[in-house]
Image (cartoon, rainbow, N blue to C red; front, side, top):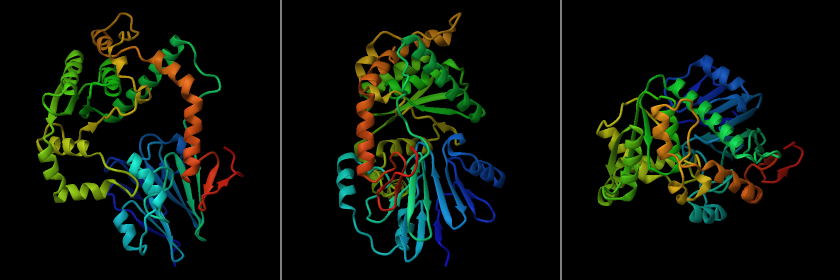
Amino acid sequence: MENFRMMLTSPLWTSTPTASEWLWRPVRDWDNEDTVNSVSAAAPSDRRGQWTVVTRQGRDLRIDTDRLRSHHLLFTYVNGQWMVSDDPESLRKHSGSWSRDAEAADVFLHTGFVVGSRTLVSGVHATPAASTVVLHPDGTWTCSLWDSFGYSTNPITSAAEFDEAFDHALDLAVTRLLAHAEGRQLVLPLSGGLDSRLLAVWLKRLGAPRVIAYTYGKPSSREISISRAVAQALGIDWFSVDLDPSRIAQRWHTAAGAHFQGATWGLTSLPHVQDWYALTVIREDHLVDDDAIILPGHAAVRTLHDTGLLHSSPRTLKCSPPSPADTRCSRVLPRHTARYRSCARRSGARRQRRRWTANAACKGCWHGSISGSGRQNTSTTP
């Protein structure tokens, strides 16, 4: 009997003819056999963008998950065989009766998601972010981090140095994005907060050619007026999607709503209903190009949690002489980097300890690796 049963339902998977390597990436028809081989051969830290990679290694099965956990896989051991899938219902059909993981359900109740490698079902596991999971034929498995976010032992303490490093990182990321976009329309969900405002500024600063912004909510809401004002200040085309609670509820109870719920929760998290409704309306009304790229700015500066920064003195972008784009940018992007740096220094160690403790308690990947029994494997070097 085959040691593994693969049940991959997403149309975005590409595999080699021998079915020894599988690659998931978020754009259909990007990849061919050569691409699968080259991506699989690269170290996880050298792979760009969003991906999930599955490879056979002798009798073992290795699953690499990207930093964002863009497309996690579920796995469980049943009757001497590993079942691996990206769809809970497909997995359930072949894995017998399920029972709720009570501890994971308590976490889910409070947060809307579960952490680490747990799911809401006992005995069913999920691949964590930035991890490598190896499934062995005897039913054991290991999970190790190939990357983690931490604070440097030699932190930046100069505001000028931090600004330069921050600008350089954003320049690299957005420049790479524009190169891969190859002229396709860029669609920016613009709430007017720091995250999306920062991304809007950098797109404008680097001369992104086809950018359109949108937001959603009640027509009279303050967020919509702020979003519109930011887009106007930057000279970016803009539109809004009205959220009518009765229409959202009506659509939620349709076959399309049921399909969305089944396709997105993955035994681990609640889907984002508002985004789904807004994007559905945008697609149906042809408000953006069919091949447009959506650029959410989630968590770019989310650690601040300080809306007061939106009203602080603007941050002046370095350019000599200043371009019209930079002049507009300086009006909409507050100087937040110095505040971010000081917040990171004060709370960094404390947040790091909390994250490690939570991951260990929930059987997630922590320093080293975690075995299938949930015990830390101290033989692996952090």
